[in-house]
Picture 1 (cartoon, one colour):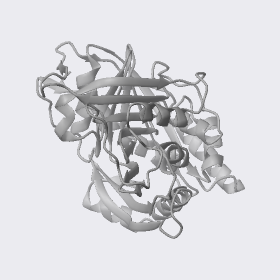
Picture 2: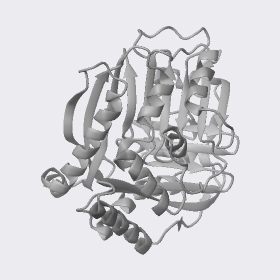
Picture 3: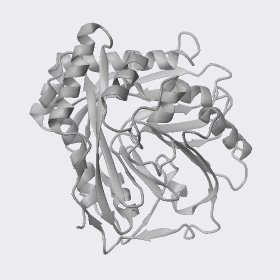
Picture 4: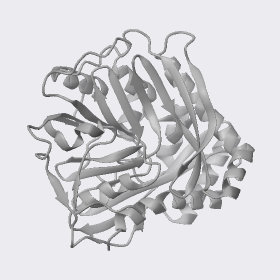
Length: 392
């Protein structure tokens, strides 16, 4: 596993690489359940107040104002569920985290003025405490299969959680996640008493020059020759994958110019750490007048971490998962005038004052084997836990 230098710069995922060492925070807005209002609209208004126009994503991108580079944007799965008229789900195990955060960045006078964090020599990470047992997880898989048998849903994604106590500075540990192979959305976002570290390979939504792209990931096997062959030949994995591709085609179609939705790539096998995963690319031209708030309401929470139909899947998720999804299964990335690039917060960890938190899960279909689903979630979580513990 890659190691970090003695000092690490903390930067949010998808931020321009050339600017990361020069970023300084200019303004911040955070939203928590109970604050009131529509967080998607409020986020768009906050960005506009700081010169970042995202009210019509079909227009050619304007220029950000002088001294503003762009903004990090985080939207939790709970905020996404509220945005589509569902409840936030079970209580979050990390209440220090906001449900939505927008941090506007400018450029410092010199490229060396951004604070760095030294690798902690007293880093200690305790044992992981799971939010459910393997048997409880397997029973939840069986409950989803029963719901599918009744016709309530076609697929639902189940996510578990674990927490471990720590001492020392968590930021270098969270930044290590960005060195994991396949981490397209590598970075860290911090606030008062909280931090999120991301190693996500999945694009929830990207908008550039008036075109939207989503890259759903569904289907996992060990990163061996046999595992790749098994993934490519699995009827169950392909059916699960195509179901989510259709769901996300429909999500984009709500915002797209008529006739522009296309599947550019279907079931491409790519590697993340020690796993093969199947990924597709869906794109569409943005209709005129569609702004950031419309985009967030359409794509959050992501189809690949909810299920189909999405609203029915959210109801089952809320009833079956032991704790809230916290920083996971939401959106985290970078926005600037006329451009959006948000990763889905899978392969993501969070820190509060004294615990690190991780989440992992998978999509459940009629063909799912409960014990195999438990093992798959553990395989997804293992590289994250190893990276967080590195140097102990």
